[in-house]
Image 1 (cartoon, helix red, strand yellow):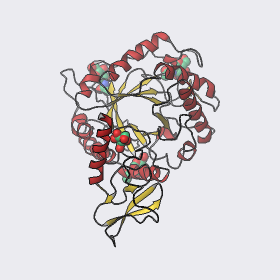
Image 2 (image 1 turned 90 degrees about the horizontal axis):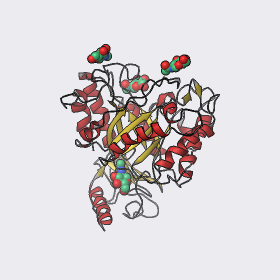
Image 3 (image 1 turned 180 degrees about the vertical axis):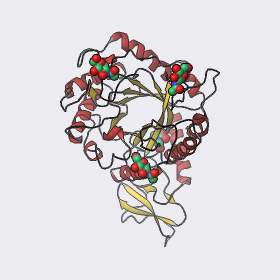
Image 4 (image 1 turned 180 degrees about the horizontal axis):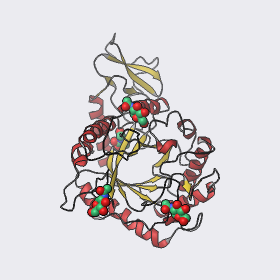
Length: 395
Ligand SMILES: *[C@@H]1O[C@H](CO)[C@@H](O)[C@H](O)[C@H]1NC(C)=O
Ligand SMILES: *[C@@H]1O[C@H](CO)[C@@H](O)[C@H](O)[C@H]1NC(C)=O
Ligand SMILES: *[C@@H]1O[C@H](CO)[C@@H](O)[C@H](O)[C@H]1NC(C)=O
Ligand SMILES: *[C@@H]1O[C@H](CO)[C@@H](O)[C@H](O)[C@H]1NC(C)=O
């Protein structure tokens, strides 16, 4: 009862809203606005997609569908494929500390301070991304996961979940183990899948878990098609382990670049299938930094790079209304980043049907003087970037 009436109310609210010019206004599975901003007309493109295109309506009805005008508006249709609400939150790093971009690791991991989860959740955060090193979870490649590390990691995950938030389990290894790329000279797909099979089994019944199969693949010597095959192996393993209801994040190349996805790995990743059915729960994992070289290492930002996200959103829509999640973005605690990040995240929030959410980089075990730190100060106050750019764009 409660759920039915909530959906009914949401449908009424959405029906009253208007789509912006070039926004979606109908199609099977669409339950958003079906009227267009003034100066544009809802134009039938195919059974799955109608779009607000510039122009003025010659009649009172917006649709130019050759058959019916009711398909797009039926509230009984399913909504966005992932079923996720708009998500806003932060990376709580530490268990990934000292993983190098070549996938080597000699560390012990640092436990993120547990108090941060309630600190951020009380401000509206509803998602945390918790990175970990492959070598900590699985000390022997392809072997059994470490029970001691798992219990340490899981206690952090449970603290985050206890706030009601979603949690991304982030394997932070750049598609590599000790310098070599999965399925391209390094670990086999089976060894990669084994890790996910074991971790997914532990969380199979928790609907707030999101599986981030790999952080920032880059420099793939044999290309993105082979990488997509590795992603498929991880997806299959997660579903076979009984985790059939959750979202899986699938990353492309060039450090999961939001800009590169449509032209590099995207076409191959579109072919990845989900044994649980459909593709809506396979959400693209993208990163975008706003400094001069897009690396997320400088304190100053040079762009909000909204144009990159606009291109990404258009690509997602063209390919069956798929969704992405911006799992890393951020900047220094500087005026330029406060302006640029605020603008970027406002775009994400306004386009959450396509970019379902964000987790900013980074709090957790980072010191407050780390260049991109979002770690609260010891007196409980937040960093300027958090206050100015992120907090206003939380759900
Ligand atoms: C996706 O659909 C679900 C289920 O109807 C809804 O609760 C959620 O708000 C939608 N998310 C976005 C980002 O539109
Ligand atoms: C870990 O140790 C190996 C061998 O001693 C070394 O080659 C590698 O660079 C180290 N990696 C890191 C991230 O320190
Ligand atoms: C966005 O960032 C990319 C780097 O990823 C850069 O090449 C491009 O010029 C930027 N675009 C704008 C509009 O600033
Ligand atoms: C941060 O502060 C610590 C000591 O409090 C210092 O050792 C470290 O160099 C500082 N790091 C930066 C990036 O300023």
